[in-house]
Length: 117
Image (cartoon, one colour):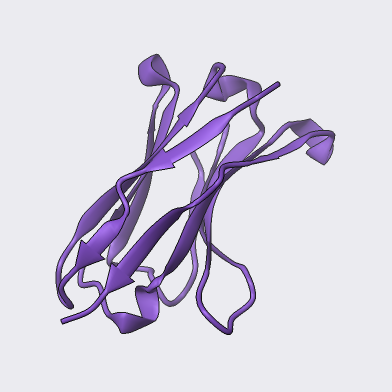
């Protein structure tokens, strides 16, 4: 069973930064792509950023220019660096990974990010 474990969430001041981590239980290159999703109170789950096996990345418009998704294959870990955080970034952030053709889809349990003064 594949496990994804998020960490790095917490309370941060507006304008601050944080880095989220997602540790996978197997090589990240067994996945076609990995990504970060978030779900804010009263909102539906949305894609924040994703990265494919080949390294191609994409970002939601709301975080583009202030976020960076990256990976460390040696550590089987996915990262999300977020800067200039604002209240709208408050959400539970989930790590996602899927295999080719979405034959398998895996989710972490989530990590809470709260942006508040």
